[in-house]
Image (cartoon, rainbow, N blue to C red; front, side, top):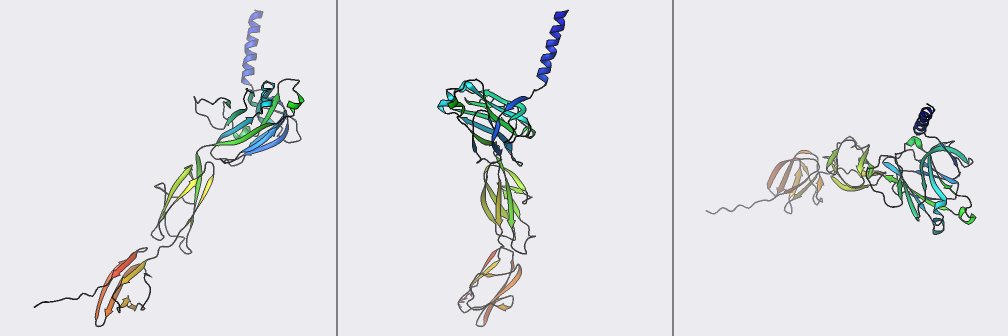
Length: 330
């Protein structure tokens, strides 16, 4: 009977320890802080000695941020003592990290004895990583994605053995922190209308697909995109722009009003009239003309001809006037 009771107690204790994550006691003086943005070009290098710590925090707006990559670089001298220290990353830190506090509690997100390598990579995922992916040698990934509420994190080097030579204990461990981003970004189109034409309609196409809300941020794959602007009031625009991962690309579009023009070719000495008004001699063509119906009259001596024509906005009209000589043979 006693043996049965002991067995039950052991089972209960084992279950309790598995159900609750006991906080770790963390010792380290905060000497560095890294705020990780959604910027593929961002990379910050920090240096820590044993029992020094760095804070890893997220910027407030981090769209498309999938995770954080931590690269640890060991000198050959430090690599010789690879089994004397471990790398620890902790979440849910209490009290909030600051430079005047040395002792903290937190949950262990990552703890690893160092392999005999000069470079070690740790991936801190914020979204679920693809299953079955094989990681390169020297690369580790925290199994469960972290939540924003888990931040800030505390990163520290933990000594595992006593008697580490002072020359080694004072050496620096160098870390490079870099964001991991989805291959997506934002584009925001800003249309600049000529004065007085702000209410004119335009059609916008990105990569051949029409969009309806030009003033808002558009989520697009990173890379080069084609923009086409079509309007009866403005000249057509065909251009390209680039979207960088995690960034918002501002695309300024200067709209240019279309001009409706008229060119008339006529023999020298011809008097030209447009809608009853004489066109001055020597006026350079093309001239601007309004949309609608018009009448052109050409006169040479006692001979004149006229022609009505309709004008659509944004087009160029070319009129050629020819006075025919008719030869009749009896």
